[in-house]
Amino acid sequence: MPQADRVAHDLLAHAPLIALSVGPDLRIAPRGASRLAKDILGEGKDLAGREFAATLLPETELAPQRAVLEDWLRLIFEKPDQDWETVLDLCPVADVSLQGPEAGAEGREFRLTYHPLRAGEGGPVMRLLVVGLDVTVERTLLRELESRDEEGEQSVRRFAEVLKLGAETFRRFLNESVMRLSEASGAAERLAVSPGDAEAAGLLFRQAHTLKANARAFRLSWIAEAAESLESALAELRDAPDPGAHPALPVALERLESLSVILDETEELATQVFGRSLDPGEARGRDRDLEVSVRVGRLESALALVRGANVVLSRPGADPAKARAFLEKADASIESLKRVPARNLFQRFPKMVADLAAIMGKRVAPLRVSGSETLVSVRTLDRIGDALVHVLRNAVAHGVEPPEARLEAGKPEAGSIELSLGAEGGRLVFEVADDGPGIDREAVRREAVREGLVGEDEAASLSEGDVHRLLFRPGFSTSSTAGETAGRGVGLDSARAAAEFLEGEIVVESGPGGGTRIRLVVLERGPC
Image 1 (cartoon, one colour):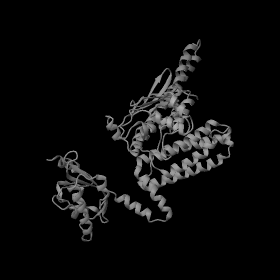
Image 2 (cartoon, helix red, strand yellow):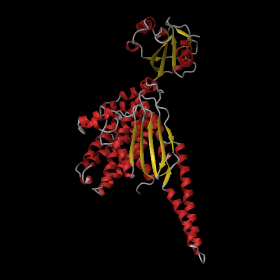
Image 3 (cartoon, rainbow, N blue to C red):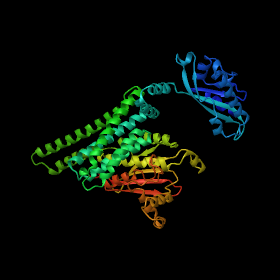
Image 4 (cartoon, rainbow, N blue to C red):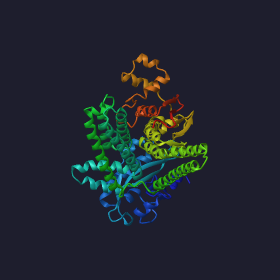
């Protein structure tokens, strides 16, 4: 069996879509139809030998379109050296509505893509693989929305973006956004009580910034615009002496409320799109129940130790040392209640990295995670979570090259990103490493000059460490437009702030062709 035939046959054997293999005679090849194609186009019968155009467009009134399709197919087989992108632009049939017993009363709509199978590199086209993706449900729902009034036009765009994400990805985005909005609201309440609370102002700004970045990453433009509007108002008061008394605060609070309303409306839209509520699911519930059970067990152990100390002290001639031993163990059990496994934070990152990679057109192997069972204080995890989101996003956007660039560099097509947690000298080390090309220091220098941070002569003399430190300046980014998901530096000022709050530091290790490693080294407990 020729190579092109083998490829087509393997693809068609069990494909859950319309798929047809067309030969140079413009007829469907033997074993060249998927099961679904046979069911819809041939009522379950073999399609081998049938004219492809007539099978796809059987109606008499479509005869002119059939003729144009056949001419286009001849162009593919008779002049294979033409630019394929140009040929695709001339394609006369990109969408088709199919009727028949298996297509239902209303028929089904398919979006067609065409894939030439050649006899070796640059050789003639031996088969044309035509694949049809069922878009019936998507088209029907979009048409329903388009039939509404002017307000419905906006719903169409939002509907389409939510639909592209899928229920699970959108649920994760929504859960994190609601959590960040809650923290932002709490910070705003603190500012109302204590106008000089700079920490609360910083937290409020970081949450708005992260909400904007996440919404942009998932192409939810209306949420990103609302978050950016909030961030702009907060930028004015972030560095003010009394941020809670700044005239921009009332504006920011109004925009915070607007963002909350938009998230609620989007959740309602998602419920309509996916036909169900976005419940976190039973698996997460089981994990939570298990953790609660463990923590209750620790508390019971601590109480038993305290009772033991009381028994010792109640006896005549009690030994204070024994009672102290009981109490020290009880204190250790109680202290452990303040700490949870790092997996409580880490478990959301593999899916986040995979989603970001898909959106950015990158190939990234599953995120490698280590140290997730290490116990960490809840406060440390709360602070370090935002930082890791930004560092991981930068790793996907800039640490990993596009697939074609990796192949040219002799690397595997899929990039590698690793998240780890370890300990060094009584400190926790959160580390994100990628196998990309490393930081483009010249790009950082050029951007620093463009922003007026340094002069050209000074930029040329900056050390490696000085260049890396520029990435952590507030607002610094190597992205060319504000709409990009992340430029080198986007959000890294938040990562630095989190490390410093935990009495630690952030360290960058990067060399040309050697990837980038970002380490957040913090105190094991952090301030309480």
